[in-house]
Length: 541
Image (cartoon, rainbow, N blue to C red; front, side, top):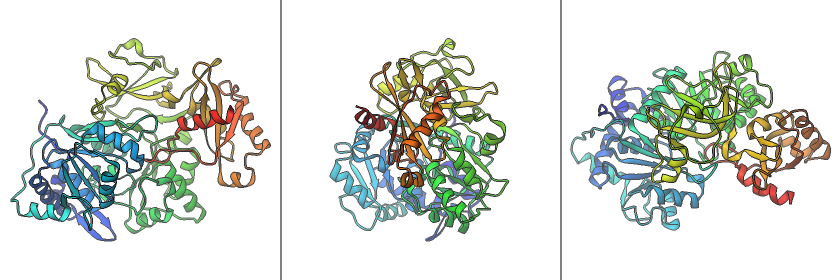
């Protein structure tokens, strides 16, 4: 039996050790760690009064801010199960996700409650409703009522939990298939926080700009203050750069996570205006490969000592590997076509590269491994890795491998390890293109064509059925290219010429210009190649 633990205990400890340190900074004022502890205790007691308790699966769709943090930690303290989804994943995906999770309580803004009623989210399973906002479009309770009930309900006592107790169901973005609910335990949350603290040398008292709200839940465990920017969190690629730059400068932010799309947008604005962000010590960017030109451009905004990290991972395993932009530019052979170097596995994380197989692998065997340098599927295991999906046995069959040391997770990503032990990412397994001449790996091939200065990004897709697929390169141009060239024959020739000189891309002779790639809602960086493939098949035919 594991020792009793609860991820919210980090907040309780911090409220004693650093009571006056701000937990949240915003234009509305300061919320200290002591105040967050007291309010979340009051809320936890109120939630119990209305029937939300240990094991109650509870959807949380609340705008990032004070209520979001109070409710999150209150739910964790009473051992309820947080159900976290991306509102921008689309109503059909959201409905399917909630049918899978079978939530029993729904906590949301008035808009979220209206959408729940209209689209039938959680119909048949949700019994308790709590609205955070000025009006209630449905029956149930208001946040104010819950806080009042908690204040009159006596002293709150946190219930004990085990490290392997279910803490949350966190849904994937659904970028390569339907979203899946990833099981998060209290121990997994704590392991991820410890790994981030040690790997990125995060110090107590730092200030975090949380452009991805879920990561703000780690801040008390990291002894960091949270700042939520004013932005649409489902559209980081369309963020107003000043809404990122201004809070960094105003609140002296030292740490931030930003999707590649967000860094691209902010760096274009900042570099052109000579903006500097001297308080930032480190920047983390993940969700998709970060182009070297984006890293170089964003670095011009930072002090020379600041680091940009590009950690690799997934909802099921955070983080797995990491490397800094400085290491990438000075120590790594980044010739186009090699894929994207994501660095060595972090301390305590185990990673293997196994032969590519689209079917289940029930039991681990050492002969699954491929030699160093050979492309295969990445498999990881460790205390920060989820061991199952909630309520989808067929997904577990395809993604989990049983071993004597525990369950190992298949990332669904393809790559290899170099002679120095660094991991290289070459693309998603489901998106590889299998032609009569051989298999093409998306990210490795695209890197060759992305070298053209007028190419913003490219996506390799296959038209037809494997192993007879026709490789088609989809290209989205930089804005000036869209205006001036508009996919001219000369530009088409120049881009294809880049691939003609490389063995792995010389068979790619079909190019289509696309106005704007479809991307995921979480980071606006993962390309929906499946959608592009359907589009390309119509164009080619």
